[in-house]
Image (cartoon, rainbow, N blue to C red):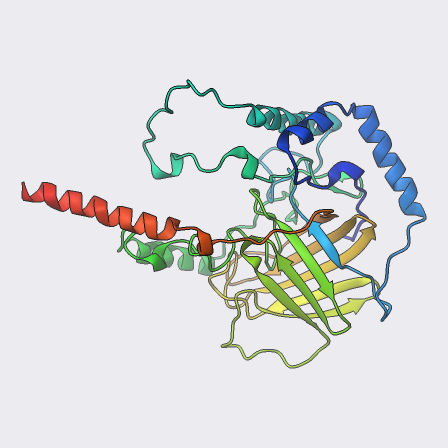
Length: 357
């Protein structure tokens, strides 16, 4: 992993969970010079800032945080590692434009949308439900084009031969079934077993859609990180106690932390093989550094030679979130899973009737 660097953030970098139109107005009226001055003032205030500490003397990581941003996990082909100021302005103005458009009232006399040809093309939520982030991720004053920092191209490394074999094996197995034949074939997130993407981790990655928010609670011998989506919760034990036996594999693995100076280092093994990016041999190292009043620098390295040709690492700023996290009700109030399965059975019955004619 590259050398740890400080996070410098702007005061309006926190994702605001209020009216989308109000957010758009605030950003539309903020001139670039004002934002730059805010960044400079924040850097100046951080010069006198001292790390808050718990009663046992370690940095206090507690609070509500979000890691959502407009920076993708992996870099688009052809981009440099850092955006230019002009690219940042264009990207963030795009957020403003989409927010303003999405907040407009719908025309009650509008015609119906054109018919869709595939399931994946069906529209889903109204834009107000999304929290994709309103600014790019800034680390050490650099607006990053990807959250992955190693390999140097900012992209996932190639799959190893073993990783390719396992992926093809899964594809071959699934090809024996229709995608709605039974609930176990549906994605884990759709079944509300865990969140989609990897917001809970490890590694803890923003999902690019919504609810990539966290509550961190800390004691001398434990750190708890609760993810808003599907209220997934990691319990990290501090120390070097006995690890779980190899055959016991919780969804988010067996996590043990220790302090290296003011940095919390977490080592995780025994990750469940159905989690993203993983094999039974996957090992994840995470580093949590309190960098300012409103920022934690989260760093990670994934080492999984059974899946990838080389390790991969990243840096993600976690920004303080002034609002409370909501209860995330998934299957508890969502009947989509039974609906898609019953819909598939209905389609099959129509096909059977047609075959008897």
